[in-house]
Amino acid sequence: MAQLEIKNEKINLAILFLLSVTLSLYLFFRTYVISLDGAFQYIPIAKDFASGLFGKALTHTQQPLYSFLIAMISPWVSDYELAGKWVSTFLGIFMIFPVYFLGKRIFDERIAFLSTLLLVIHPFIRRVSAEVLKESTYLFFLAIALWFTWRTIERGKKFSFLFIPLFSTLAYLVRPDGIEVLFITFFYVLFIKKFNGFGNKWRIVLLMILSSLLLFLPYLIHIRGSTGMWTLSKVKTVGGFLGLQGIDLNVPFIDKILFSLKRLNLEILFNYHPLYLFLFAIGFIKGASSHFKQGEKYLLSFLIVHYIVLFFLVFNITDWSDKGEIQFIGFSGRHVLPLLLFSIYWVGEGVLVVYQWIFKQLESHHKLFGLEATKRSQLLWVILFIIILGTILPKTLKSHRYERLPEKWAGVWIKDQSGGGATLLTTLPRVAFYAGVKYELIDFKNDSLDQIKISILKGKAFYLVIRGKDLFIYPELSESINKSFIEAVRYEEKGMDKVIVYKRVR
View 1 (cartoon, helix red, strand yellow):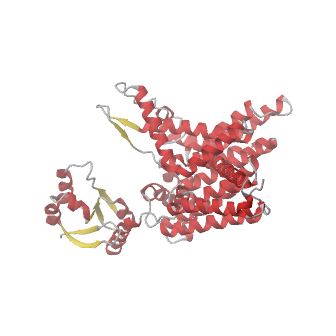
View 2: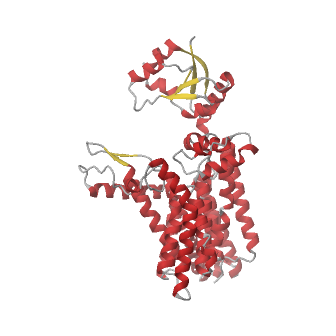
View 3: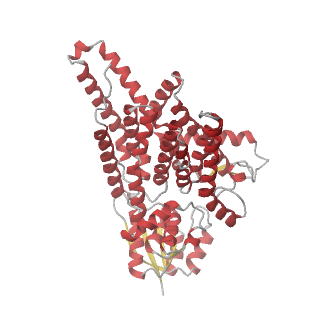
C-alpha cells in the first residue's frame, strides 16, 4: 500500500518551520490588544526584573520565567507588550522541533510530520503564540522536557538522567504543573525501566534526586518564605489544590465531583476542535488495538496525570454558594493545552488510518480513476490536506480582539494628554495599561448603581472611560457623569466597541 513518503526529513522540517513562522507572524500582527493577564500579571513582573528589582519580581504570585524572558529582550524592542509577544512567537515557532523528534522516536517520521503539522495549525496553539501569555513558553519547555526525557529513558545513559530535572525545572518555572515531568520520570525509573545491575538504578535515582534538589529547592524555599508553607505555587497550597480546604459540607460531595468532570470535559471538547477529537479517537483505538508501544504508554501516563491534575484544579476553584448554586471561575482553555500536546500523536495517527482506509477502498476501483497507485496516493494526500486545512485554518486565522482597539486608542490618547500622570476611573482596565496610569475599576455587574455614582461624583480620578453601551444599559448614570465630567473624545469604528473618554470638570 502506498504511504506518505518522508524522502527528505530536512525538507519536511523546513515546511513545518515555514508554516509555523507564517501563521505565527500573521497572528502576531492580527492580535490587536493585549490580554488582561499579560497587562496586569506578566508585564509588571517583567518591569521589576528589567529594573533589577529581583526580590520584588519574585513577590508576585505568577511563576517567574516567562516574565524574566520578556525582561531579557525588552531593551531590544519598543515596549513590553511587543517583548512579550516576541517571546511567545519565537518559542511557539521553535516548539515544532521537540514535538517532531519526540513523535519520530515513539512512532515514525510520517506520524511525526502529520502530528506536528496538526499542532502547528491548531487555532488555540497559534493564538497563544501571538499573545502576551505564558502558554506558548510553557509548551515549548514541556515539549523539550518530554523529548529529552524519553530519549534518556530509551538510551539509559546515566549521565543524561542528571539533566532531566533541568528541563522539568524550566517548565515548572513557567507553570507549576511542569513538575509532572519529574514525577513521571521517577515512576518510570523506579518501576518500569530496566537497568544492567541493581545498583545502576539507585545511582540514577540518587543523581536525579540531587539534581532536583539543587534546581527546585531554591525557588521552593523562596515560596516557603513568602507563604509560610511548603507548596509548589504561591497561588495554591497543596491542600487547597486537592480541594481539602474550605469544603462546604452542605454541598453533596458527589455533586462537586460530577460538576468538575462535566466542566473539565466541556472545556476539552470546546478547545480541541471536533476534527481533532474525531481523529484522536481513531488513532487512540488503533494504538490500543496494538497494545500501545512503550513510548505511547509514556505519553498516556502524562495524559492521565494531567487530566487528574486539571480535575482537582476545577474541583478546587468551583465556588458553591450557601444556596447550593454553582459559580465557576478561574479556569480556561489554556489549562487544557498540555493535553493536546500529549495526545497530538494519536491525532496524527488518526489521519494515517483514515488515509489507509480510503486508499484501500479506492484500490478496488483503480480502473475507474485511471491512475497508478503512486499518483492515486499523492492525489488522496492532497485532498486530505485540503480538507484538513480548509476545516481548521479559518478559525486559526481569525483576528483577535479587533473589536477592543478603541480601548487601546483611548489609553494612548490619555497618555499623550497627561504624560502618564493622571488617575483613571474605568470599566476597561486595558485603557489604564495603555495610558500608563493608576486606575480605579468600576464593575457594573457586581457594584450597585449607588456605589458607582458615588465613585463618579466623589472620586479623585481625572478621567472616566466607559463603553458606549454602558450608558444605554444604565441611562441613569448620565446625570452623575455630566455633573463631574465632560466628554473629551470617543472612539467607534465598524465592528468595534464604542469607548467614551470623559475629562473631569475643573
